[in-house]
Every structure is written in C-alpha cells, then in structure tokens.
Length: 202
Figure (cartoon, rainbow, N blue to C red):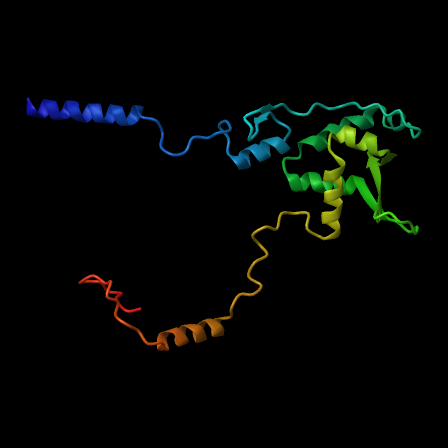
C-alpha cells in the first residue's frame, strides 16, 4: 500500500510539473524576439511591433509621377518588375547599400547662403527620376536615404556598435606593473571576517 501511494504521488508530481506554465518572462510582442522581428520586417513580411500592432507587408506601389520629367513614362514596361525586390533584402545594412547605389550625392559648387552642401540625384533601373517618384516607389523617407548617404561618406554604413572599444586598453607591461604595486601595499585583517574565512586581508 505504501509503495502504491508513493507511485501515485510521483505520477501526480510529474503531471503537475508538465502542466505548469513555462518559467521566464512572457513575450509582450507576439512569439518573436526583437532580432527576429527586425529580420522579418526587412524581409517585408507581416509582424507584430513593440506596440502590439500587426504590421502588414508593404505592397508594391505603382506610383504615377505627374511632374515635368514624366518619370513614369520612362520606367514603363518590364523594367518596373525588378523594383519590388528592393523591398525584401532582409537587413537594414542591405537597404542602406541599395539607397547609396541608387542615389548619388553631388556636392554643391554654387555660393549660396543655404546649409545644403549636397544635391541628391535619384535613379531607378539606371534612369534618372525625381525625388517623389523615388521615395514613393521604394516606400521610404528622405531621412533614411539622407542618413544612408551621410554614413557612406563617413564609411560607417554597417553597424559598428560594440567593436570600437579597446583603443585605450592598458598594455601587458602596465598591467603587470599595476598588479605588483597593489601586491606591495600593506594589508590589514578585517574585523568583519568569519572564523574560517580565507580572504580576511584587505
């Protein structure tokens, strides 16, 4: 009887452990981590953002430019089929490289009072287009394009956070010198120590 009761208690314990909820913090924004959400976002797939809102993928916008350049007439036909692939590169650095390859910054040579130092020239499928046509077709903003060009001039398109440290790191000789100086300092017995404590000196 005692053995049967023990077996019943063991089975109940295993059932309760298997039925209990998972440990750890629950995800606030769907089932994906932040890195997975970023990857899905740049692949142009549906995802749930940090505000718990479902973001649908960007559909290809066949923007009709009514400007004097008539950009829409130049890109008509099979050339426009290649443009939607730009929306699905998968990484932010890849989209920055695309913006830099399609948009060129030409330095201003005229003397004017404006702070603008560069003039952007936009291309789609090797054809010169206006700013509205470029931004609406790629469904991006001027700030993102301008930031990509500025980072290209500074040679920092890729994310270099966490890789720039260590320029003031102490050499091996300096570390050994500091360790020897610390060892030569006088030590005192702490009155906060326990009876069998090995690190009573400070």
